[in-house]
Amino acid sequence: MRVKLSELILKLESGGRPKGGAIKDSEAIPSIGAEHLNESGGFNLNSLKYIPIEYYNKLKSGRIEKSNILVVKDGATTGKTIYVHDKYPFSDSAVNEHVFVIKIDSKKAFPFYIYQYLRSPQGKREILSDFRGATVGGISRKFIDKVNIQLLPLKDQIRIANILSRAETLIAKRKESIQLLDELLKSTFLDMFGDPVRNEKGWEKKAAISYADCIVPGRDKPKSFTGGIPWVTTDDLEHLSTTIKSKKDIGLLRDEIKQVKARLIPKDSVLMTCVGDLGVISLAGQDMVVNQQLHSFQCKKSINNKFLMFTLSYQKKYMYRKASKTTVPYMNKTICNSIPVIKPPLELQNKFAQIVEKVENIKTKYQESIQELENLYASLSQKAFKGELDLSKMEVEEYNLGHAEPGRSMAAEEGVGYGKKESSKK
Image (cartoon, rainbow, N blue to C red; front, side, top):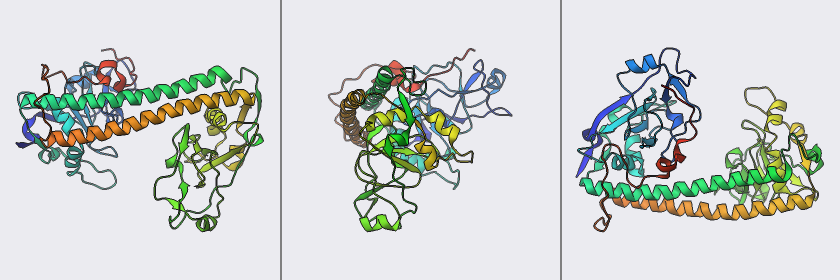
């Protein structure tokens, strides 16, 4: 039986902020907005703002409770959905005017099951079917009449939520493992070479151009993409990645490279953003052409490209200090080439590069595993909400339907999905 989401809801509310907006007083009440909800279903509480206690006490709507579902109502992330787990760190908090808070009638449906449906591809489509507006569009309160949920017996809802939660947990663990590997590389670099800015180990330090050549990027955007040589822009870079490649189907022929007055950037060049978000750095995974928002370095024999990539990443303050003071920060060729670079013995650089390669191999396997798990999650989700999963052999665990969740996710168990939070004394 399919029912409208509106038939399962006890409350649908949005919040607000006092005149003058939220404040940065950690003694007040946290105000949760779209920026605090992450794509993996958890919270990012690093940059909280607050509303005064007096204002919170007068609120008639928008207060957050355990087992609520939060849905972003407008802006670029409209429809993003989060579940408020038992480990949510605040006893008192509220959403702002950009977020809906939903309370499910636990006598009719299992809240975590409803949350999983809203996160599924079908659920997202139904939420966004209410999207309206152009520049800053969003959904209205009427979206709950456009979401139609397969309402199974309560025990089956728990079983399905349990299965999907466990799949989410595996994905979250893999992602955390990749983050830990990234941190390992950063700490290994500092152990071996020290901070490149302070240069406490006294390495030789010269301008980057002393150790690497550069190739001027293309001046014009290609009118067509019909070849196999990647055209790379800032959006293609992943910071400190050793395998950056262009998106599929965006490539040039050699004649087209000439048309945009560009030269081929050889594989293993160090690529660096020089406009906007400065100092996003990675390696070319193959021969490619880049636009004017990227600067490239081709390392000489005296420096390792993976070492150069990491040591440049510590010079962001230098980049922003030297960049043009316009609306969008910009580093010209001279500034890029003048970035200070330390040069320890090549043998030590190569040793670090070998560690990077080993870690990257592990990360690649984890990323492949994440893709497989995400495909599995999507398949399970689709079958579950169509009633095609065989649930007869699944055990049913007993839960407090109002406040607990099945297969407690890593975010709930370890706080991984909640980010760091500032202290909140109430």
